[in-house]
Amino acid sequence: MPKDIEPTSKNLEKKLDLLIKRFDEQKGIIDSYVKRERDWKKDKVLHQREVKKLEKTLKKYRNE
Image 1: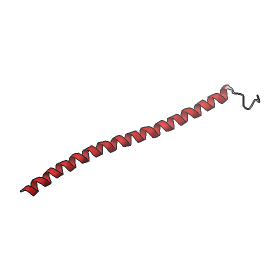
Image 2: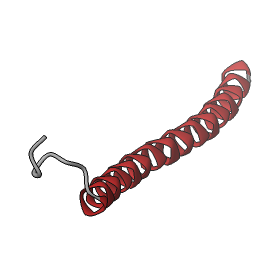
Image 3: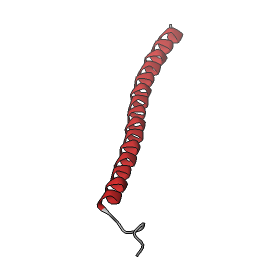
Image 4: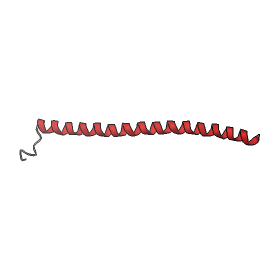
């Protein structure tokens, strides 16, 4: 086995650091997506409540 390919502690350490950095990047992307999704769902619920409230008001004025 050539020395270039032979795993050394330095090479393994560098590869491990690279994998950890990639993991952190992916985790950040996923966390950001989850936060946006939760915000969107919260806004959706609030908008649905407002629409229902306005529909009730509209029905009330139409029946008068």
